[in-house]
Length: 69
Image (cartoon, rainbow, N blue to C red; front, side):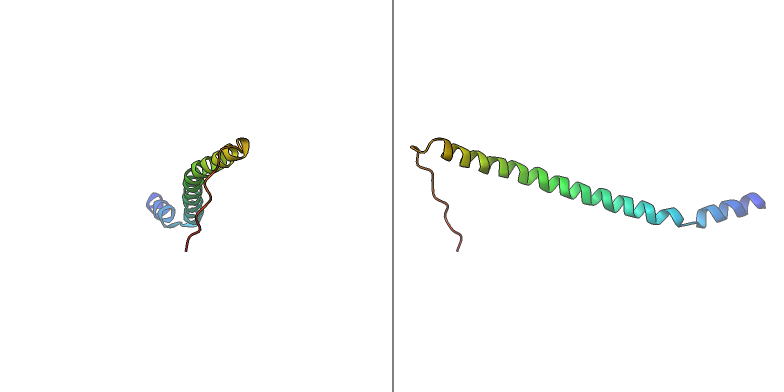
């Protein structure tokens, strides 16, 4: 009887559930931030490479950016 009540008490405790939920939420946010940084990182590196090439060779005309309407 004592063992059954101890098992029932163990299964009904929810003290650690909130901590696990916060941990999972933090892991999800970290994954989203990493994915965005990975995606934008390549685009930014490409843009800075183009700008660097334009500055390094001023005799070669670089295209002017087209403004969005």
